[in-house]
Image (cartoon, rainbow, N blue to C red; front, top):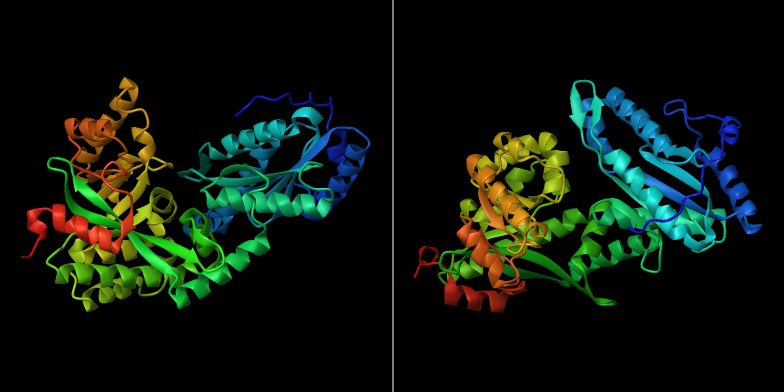
Length: 453
């Protein structure tokens, strides 16, 4: 991120003492108090006193903290976050509580020529402050946040638009897993997200979804042992919509329940069709934590699979690393039920978040899918090679299988094979392809033990 000049702070916090500290919990101005300050700051900015930015800070999965640790420690976390926010910004900036787990930060008198860069610097400073471990009672906790930034006059010309665009930017950040996002032309309006969710629900009903499949390869002989099934959506109005866009919307709006049910049924139908042709690869697909929180989730998944005549031990249910980190304790009973029913469980995108390999000893996980980022500098960078080798050794010590994701060139595959990794997937072998192409690939190169004729 580029460095940018941030104005020197004034000598005192005089303006802060004039604000009403109406939020008793976090000892911060509330939204009403901040609104008056936003209006005043924009008025001064119009006379040439510098640009203004508003940061919308939303803690990810805060409800899980309350559920797991109780509201008293949840309130303590909010107070600690408030303290860190105050410490991360300049004295002339204002931190306010929006309500719940949301905070607003008004950044005043930014340099006109580099306001966006200066706002990004402060936004990243906020993110870094929140990412450091929190101590709550006897527990140490890692918390993630989505931070959206909007600037005046670049992105908005009124206090209302400034707030609206900061919130829209925050949802963009949340949709990509957290971090800092500055409002721009690509930022989706919240109403557009609701419209997208409605179209997605109709798309499920109208049969606009399809599965694509990517092979999972055995490196020793480059044969297929399994597939990962991935949902695609061809919207009648927009054409192909990226999963990175519609899946986060489905998660936030509840459409993920209907989407997840469709994926499960279609994966089972396709596995049944392959079995009829004598092909029995392992089949994996990503499961949403929300699906698993529904009553009777494990039984429903097992019943659906068995109703299609498929053995549960051929299914790998994948959850992202962030889901394991935030949801594992709450979902432990249903995860154990799934294991008891014969399913294998996998951590997807391992290494992209905050999981600990040491924690794997206590989780009902059989498979670690290592995030593609770890292969970026392999095999040319000795340091990157050592890190990947350490992951393989530690995973083996924990008794977990490893799937290397993101294998895009022969050098990656050769390095992994030489390092003792046995299973991989990526564009070097095949992109995700429609079912007919995947069927042809299975017929050509599936491992002999996964044929029935």
